[in-house]
Image 1 (tube, rainbow, N blue to C red):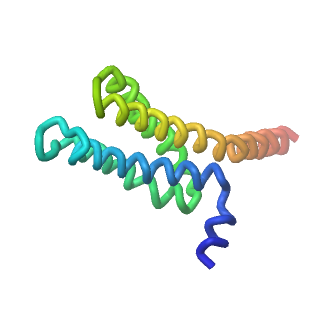
Image 2: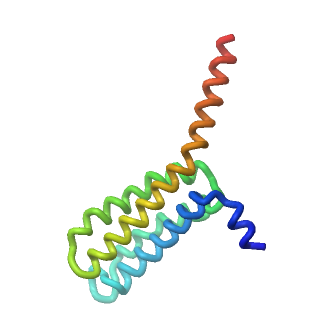
Image 3: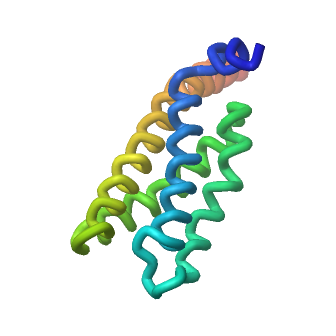
Length: 132
C-alpha cells in the first residue's frame, strides 16, 4: 500500500526529497564522526538542520516549500564547491555534498517548471480577460 503511494508521486519530487534526506545524513555523519572539524564532532553538525524543515514539504509536494528549498540548497552546493579543495575524506565528502545538492536543485527546478509555466499562462489569461 505504501509503495503505491510512493509510486504515485512525481519522480522529480521523490528524487529531490531523497537528495535532501541523504544530504542531511551526510552533513551529520561528516561533522560528527567521518571527518569533524574537531575530534569528537563540531558545531558544524547543525548545518543539516535547515534541510529538516524542507523535507516534509518536499514530500507533500508543497510548491512554496520547493521554491525556498531550491534557494536553500544552493548554500550546500557552495559549501561543497569550497570544501572540495580540502584533502582526504573531506574531499570525498565535499564531492558527495556537491553531487547530492546539485541533484536536489535540478530536480526541484524540473518539478517546478510546469507549475510555473501554468501559473504564467493563468496570469496571462486573467490579464487578457481584464482587458476585454
